[in-house]
Length: 386
Image 1 (cartoon, rainbow, N blue to C red):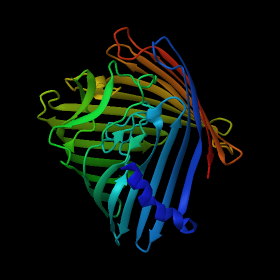
Image 2 (cartoon, rainbow, N blue to C red):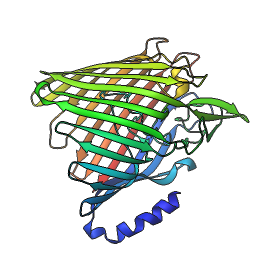
Image 3 (cartoon, rainbow, N blue to C red):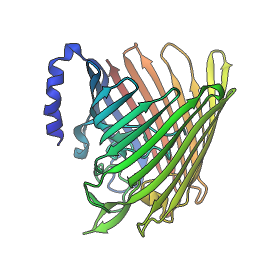
Image 4 (cartoon, helix red, strand yellow):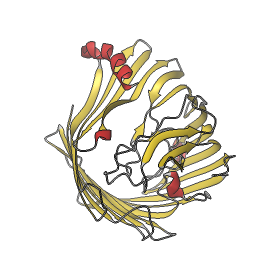
């Protein structure tokens, strides 16, 4: 499939002089301090990301390429297209056909509402914006301060995983990316989404109804390998962001109906606050964040690939407001059920206009019987932007 996508994209590169494009390439390297047997303590990878658009009258074609070459992990030597779609624009609506990524939700650290795309396990598992593109057909109607979309996701993708020696492969047993689907491979998922804004009270909101495969999957054991199981849900979602003065209020609500005996019905809830101290130190701004997440699924949330089940997160965002757009984001998360903790801090800045530098530190402080192990990770990203 990926080779086919590559050849499909060749004609657009031939007429590159008429394309809109941007992207970056560089390297990622990290050092990991841990006591886990048979796991690497260093990682190094080259990457390329590019976005390309070409307009044809009232339509456009968009491509978003992602490519990795990992020094040690053969599973992370690939290229893929997260976006590869055609969109035709009518007067007050558009139709999209192809593969793309969508971002739904209101919270900062983790979005319960962001259910459309499958998580990309070949990337950082704690980067919740890293996803696999989904093949779909979508119609969107634009109203005065809102929009309504009907989206048909054509099928569910498998989730490849980093190799067993990678520290980001948390599975206790070997993993096979086979996917068992409750209603078969070709059963589509249907989404009806309404979103809008209320300018007079500075509120953004969204509502989503889904009938189809859940974004969460549970594991089972087949021939001594862990495999994923996808199940059908009717899911109801609401999210909103409300700004009042220097305070931002955020919330996400999810309720799912399932006839799968392993899952049953479940609900999720998230609430967050963000307060910004503008000019707290010269021209610098400091944002203080706090968020709470709750999941009442009868199956352990971590077994569904969810790290947040009854968790409280505190964080900060320091915007230096300098010419390099430097920013520091940090905080910690605590599982209120077992006191498992995650600490993190990340610094991003531009260097010489075209280069971007990222430094991050993350610490996992798990309980003794957790599927996670104690870990310190220091990571460097350096890339050229064009």
